[in-house]
Amino acid sequence: MTFQLSVDPGLNTGISLGFYDATTPYRLLGRWQVHNGLTGFIAWMDANAGTLTGVDEAVVERFVYEKGANADISGVPIEGVVALWAHQSGATVLWHTRFDKAGLTGYPPEATTKAQRQRVRFDLLERFDMFAPGTENDDSNDAICHSLVNLKNRRHAPTLRMLAGGKDSA
Image 1 (spheres, rainbow, N blue to C red):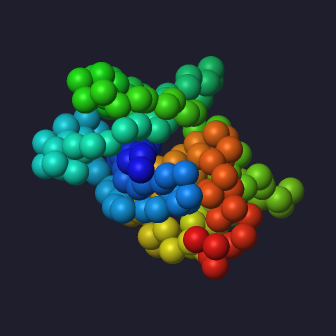
Image 2: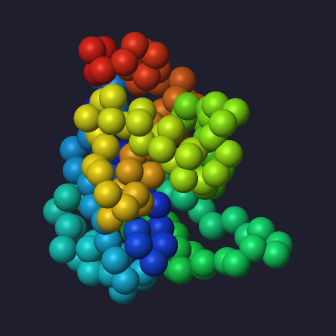
């Protein structure tokens, strides 16, 4: 069994914890929405040290600078904290960008705004009882999306079957 932490860092950081194995698709164990950037994330790590014991890998959204964009770099120090924790604990870090989330479902042509594309991803999470409603949970929902797209990209067969078959195959 592989335990996977997923972190969508920022001023508001989404975190999820799940597991999978050779016959089991991704299963969500917990989710958190952490506020106050780096300070809040470090406090969360301190409070959840026992939860992190035994985590094998961490999927982390890495900041990508876009020229001309209004950049929020508050997630960058959190990336460093996760990398250090992984190094010290023996976990593997699997880096993603925010663009990787699109690989989870693809988007219909009419989903042209960020909110519309987010809704497509969150509808998929809802099919598997992994969605938490409200903007308060957007980042933790995105963390779960990162876990699922990571396993999809790695061709994890049980998760692929779950995603293809809908809720009944979960």
